[in-house]
Amino acid sequence: MNDRTCIVTRKTAETDDLIRFVVGPDTAVVPDIKRNLPGRGCWVTADRLHVDKAAAKGLFARAFKAKVSVPPELGGMVESLLERSALGMLGLARKAGSIALGATKVEAAVRNGTALFVLHAAEASPDGVRKISQARRATAHLGGPAIRAHKLFSEAELGLALGGTNVIHAAVLAGDAGKAAQKRMVALDRYRGGTPDDLAMLAAVAGEDDAAEDME
Image (cartoon, rainbow, N blue to C red; front, side, top):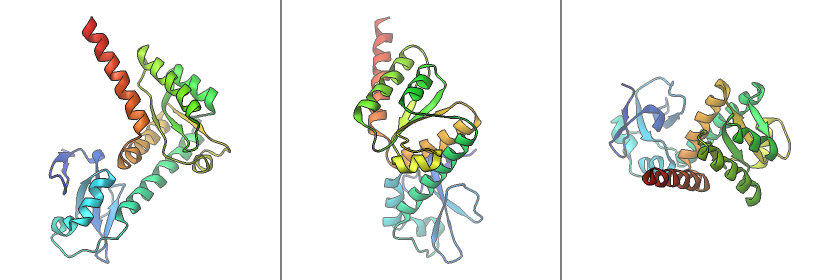
């Protein structure tokens, strides 16, 4: 019952996979990230490609059946809102005690399965990322959770959200605050097209698991 139709693809999807837009009092198209703004809304697949396409092809005017103005940087505006929401939820997870900081603590949280997801700063070294990726792979192969990793923010942005300095690696732990943060991270990552290294790692694990099943 929560499915909506994307104005670009014309396909239905759950609301978590779409972004809602409304028309403001000045006839400008406004992203409604929290899906709580008043008025009639339209929906776009939740990635930058489809938002940019909807703006470029005049699909908002068609969807609202009215003359509307589309901000020239609508796609960037949506991304900024998603970033702000994700960083805000990270801050709440920190206050709830649901954060592990530093490569050693992150690796431990991954191996014992308490990490919901991992964050690497944009400045993280390949060696540091590789060690934690190996731990994630090992945990998945041993029957533990497939723990995703995201590289979405700079060291400075992570430090500001998490109240630390030199924040290169962080793990968000299980709990309500962690789950809320995870939802925001997935939304931002999806909007940006996904983290290539993480998607490759998950695909490799899935492929190896399928191969093991075929041999049984």
